[in-house]
Length: 142
Image: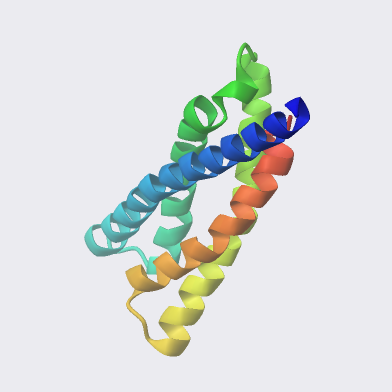
């Protein structure tokens, strides 16, 4: 019976972790789209160039929130060197997600004619599953 309780508790904890990851990601969407809009509309950068910068800004933002909130139970008492290693892993994984994001953004905007901010939302959605799955396995593994 104790093993069933541990399994149940683990499932609940992982659902809560995924919810925290999604909430961090949702706030990161705001950061991403805000910078995408700012760089494109006010600084005049081409939207795909703006996307690269805005995605990287949101990756760093998301890492910090995930490190100190979503995965805090997995990183307690770790050194700055270990945290930097996790940040590099997170950035590499999210870099693949960013490539997915930019490809979806470009395809939907250029081929279908969607407004670039709407296309960006679709790109973010597609990249989210990749980012979570890989980061849970590599960046913040047990």
